[in-house]
Amino acid sequence: MSIIIKPVISEKANYLTDLRGSYSFLVNPKANKIQIKKAVEAAYGVKVADVNTMIYAPKVSSKYTKKGLQVGKTNKLKKAVIKLVEGEVIDIFAVN
Image (cartoon, rainbow, N blue to C red):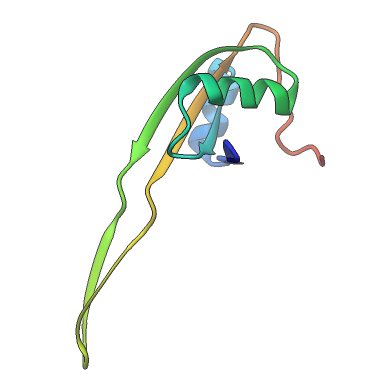
């Protein structure tokens, strides 16, 4: 099971990185905070101080067509905000 899916790169995530030293990642919805902490420490070689997680419910959309009502939904997402120990930095744009 892959824990970290990808880093979140947005204006708000970059602002939190500059302001608090927090980094945002999309993670596997079944992963817990301890697994997320170990995965980030192993992948980036840093010390994690705190992990906060958020679960986003799937979004449902529907439309009427010739065949009737078509219903679809997106996948459930889990986002983790990682706060590093003072002085630690992750270079997200580095090529691995």
